[in-house]
Structure formats: C-alpha cells, structure tokens
View 1: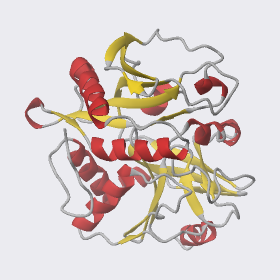
View 2: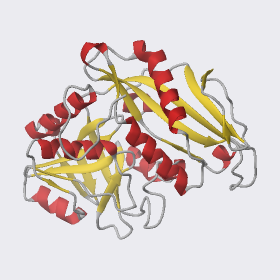
View 3: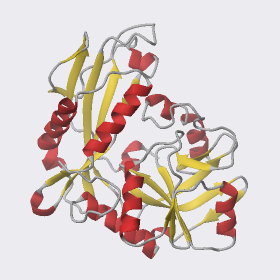
Length: 335
C-alpha cells in the first residue's frame, strides 16, 4: 500500500516552515521550498535517526473557520519525545506560529469534502554533520503539510506479529521518534507480501496486545470500547483519548485494561460482537476487515457498517470540525 493511498494525500504542499537552533538559540520561522534543504548524508538525523515528529490535522468547520485540533496536546507530547532522546525543547510560541503559518498558507488546498483535511507534520531534526550520535549541536524545526481525504469506506487487513516485538519496557515506545518506526519495516514488509495492510504488535512475551505499527489499537466487544492504557511501551494517542471521551460522553462503556491476544481470538471464535479498530491522526478511526493470528484467519466483511462503530466515527469527525465537544476527560482546545 503506497503512502499516497494509505493517507489519502494528493501531494505534499510545496512549502514548509523552518526554524533553526544554533548555539542554543532559535531563529524565527520562515517558508522554504520542500526541495530545500537537502540534508547532508553526514547529518545526524540521517545517520542516527535523530529526529522526532507529530501528526496534526486542520479542518474546515462551521462558517469556514479552520480548526487546528488539539495542538497543545501535540506540542506537549512532542516535548516528552524530545526529552527522552535529549533534544532541545521547542519554544511554544515558535511551534504555534509555525503551525499557524502553514495552515493560513494552505487553507485553500483542503479538499472540499466532509472528510477532507490538512495533514500537518511538525518535525524536530538534528542537522549536525557528525560521526558522533550524541553531538547535540544544530537542530531544525520544520512543519510539512499535505491535503488529504480520509475514505470512510476503507478497512484494514491485519497481520499479528509473534516473532518479534516493537518495543520493550524502559524503551522509547511512548515517544514519536524515527527509530520506533524504522524497526517495524521488516515485519511490515513481510505482512504486505502476505497480502496484509499492517502489523499488530504484541508485548515482549507475545501475550498482550500493544498497538499497530502506525495506529493505536482499540476494539468494540459486545458494545464495550476497549483500548489498553499507555504503559510506557505505546504512544499516548490523542485520537484514542478523544475516542474514549466521546464514548463516555455518550454512555458507551469503556475499558482500558490490557487485552490478551488469546482472549480476543476467543471472543471472535465465540461469535461475540467484535469490531477491531485502528486510531490515528491521519486515518481517524478505521475498522479491520481481516485479521490473521498464526494460522488462524478471521474476516469481518461488514465491520465499517457496524452501527456503534459508525456512531463513534461520526462523532469523532464532528469533534474535528468543531461541531461537537465531549464534556469529559480531554482538553479540546482549538486554535
């Protein structure tokens, strides 16, 4: 599955904002072509994957107003990631200004579709040319963007990885850093060769479900929305927290307990009402139509037509457009 099809991007916008930190001082943000800068092969971000990122969305809401949703939470999580790998803190005003500059410039590229949005990816990269992975000298803060449409009819096919794990306790699983994604490439490629869209990861003992490669895991079982709480191994997903807040606001029971893969399989085999769900910034939420665990293959051909899944998905889109804000748990500050 290509990136273009996976995210619904038509193309990257032709400008990015960039600010630089040199000698521990940040420059102001300005626009640059996506064709520049070209990083040296000696750059630390290339040689040692010294970079991190976030994913945000901008929507056209009521009255044509642009909603850049939950930016403060993305900013906060970016600082947590930076602290984990000893990168500098991005000044809040620089983050906010850079994001607003991109949204303002590319508002007219947002697709005129109820599921259209502007995807934004702020990145912090170490740009120092060095053999030293701990150089900590020069950094770039950039914001990329692309218009996108999320297809509400799309579903995922999933391969459960049992031969390796994505992260371990005490590692960097909670941070959105490059190395967490690089190490999924081998199993992801294996899954695609077998005809599956993505991988579902288990813990070190191949017992409990953790997350997909690029999405957070959730599942509806007999009307209860279940999604494992962040335990240091997985991303504290903002979309997941929003989904749980929507469920609680609509009197839908929730659970954040760990889920054993064998228990999920048993629920499917017992023909309980099961809808497996992936949550992410780019995909919002997406249902799973095919699921492979070992030699067992389960199919859910009508997963994205499930009434409770549709209710949650529609409510989530209404949140994105500023039409509905849950009363519970999450600070839904909009810029």
